[in-house]
Every structure is written in structure tokens, then in C-alpha cells.
Image (cartoon, rainbow, N blue to C red; front, side, top):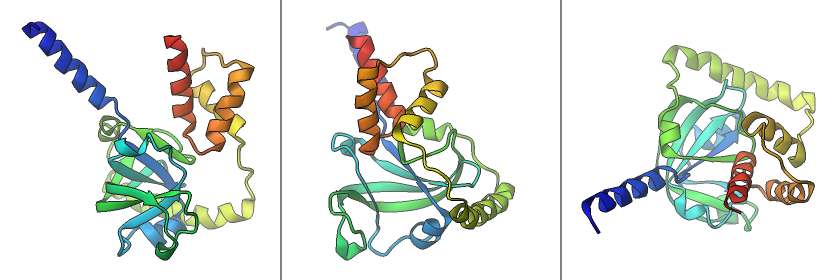
Length: 210
């Protein structure tokens, strides 16, 4: 192997590492934020989600997106490990995963889209997101706290998996086509808890390789 080949290999390794989606983002209401997120739980354990096993080894950080705050990320967790949810820790579904964190950090970043369910991004993507100025924090938290009570009384219709896929395709992949047969498979993936955008990305990537 010559020097140029070795350099090219290292370059490709570096690029592939940067492309790994090592961050999970989940949304929280203001009420849940005050209860479980604003201050760390003594057992440093949080959440219960359906997460695909192959995703878990890559997730190093978890971020909290505060609903109705104007797209604000409010917390960053450094993950120690994932475990099945335990009733003795206050979680009621042992088929879902919780994570134990090493440390947490209050942050104020402007996220670039609405979070429904969970999303997966690279550390580089998160780092490049804009910081929210201190002067804007009060109104964002106030809006989130007030919207919480208003939202309960609106009985807003939750979108179906099919509607979420259609919306995401219009935004991120407007010129791509999904066959009716494949659409059923994608809908099932979303219904099983997979992120909508990631499902579409993986689908169109697989189509390029065939």
C-alpha cells in the first residue's frame, strides 16, 4: 500500500465516523421537563422507548427538544448505557429501553425541525446548530409552559404514520417516488417507532444500491 492509498483510507474512515448518527433527540412536554429533566433523577436513568437494537451501540448522546419552545434543545445527556426499562425505577414497559447517563448539561440550541417521536442525527450536525441567546430563553420557556395547558384542551388530532411519511417526503425528498408496495413497509417501520426521516433516507439509499 502506498502513501496516497493510506491517506485515502484514513480520509474515508474519518468521513464514515462523522456520518454516524450518534445522537438521539426526543421531544418533551413542559410538564415532563419539570418532572424528570430540569433536574437529574438520582438514579440517572431516563425514558422508555422502542429503539432498534442496531442503533443502540452508536448512540453516545441524547438531546431533549422542548415542545412549543420555538424549536429549542434544552438538555444534553452523555450516555453510559441503555437497559430495558425497569418498574423499580418508575418505568412501566419492560419491552422498551431506558438510558443511564454519565452526566447532563443544560443547553440552548435552535433545532432545525419539529421533533415527533425520536430523531437521530450526527454530532457534527448538532454542533453546527445555532445557539439561542440568553435574552430569548424566558419567552421560550413561558410559551412552552402556557402551550402545555392549552394543548390539552384542543384535542389535536395526532397524525397517522402514513401522513407523517407523506409530509416528510414532501419536505426532504420531493422528487423521489415510493411504490405502493414499499409504502406499506415504511408505514409499518414508523408505527414500530422508527424516525420518519431516517426511514425515508434508508429506503432511498437502498434503492440507489440496487
